[in-house]
Amino acid sequence: MECKQCGKCCQHPCALEPNDLEKISDYLNITIEELIDKYLILDYWMTTEESLYYFTPKRVGDNGTKIASFSWAFSDKSCMFLENNLCKIHDVKPRGGREWICGMEEEPYSKHEAGMLWKGNKYLEVGK
Ligand code: SF4
Ligand code: SF4
Image (cartoon, rainbow, N blue to C red; front, side):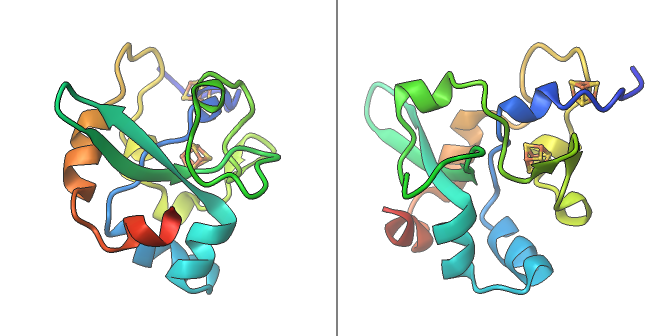
């Protein structure tokens, strides 16, 4: 389906992959630590054994929020990178945003997969 740029899909900020940290920070010309501090939040997926953390963009208006809460997850405030219904980091858009096709019932890059990819990543500690 053709994208009508309504911006609705970006009310659910897309999960990053670990290599997105370098790509996005280079694109914005800031350090990875600055990227995490200013633009990212830690979200998580709970399995029966553990909570798997991964980075995702903050929402508009998030200040100082480091770890996603239940109300954050179900907020309808858009991703901080959405500007005039366009992705401000389109050239380095995370996989979840790139692979999304309007009308999909499930995200192409699942939160469980994201959590598994981020497991043990040193930058998770920077985000906490
Ligand atoms: S892909 Fe996203 S922005 Fe485009 S029409 Fe669908 S929900 Fe709207
Ligand atoms: S990073 Fe871009 S594609 Fe992903 S949710 Fe934010 S605005 Fe949308």
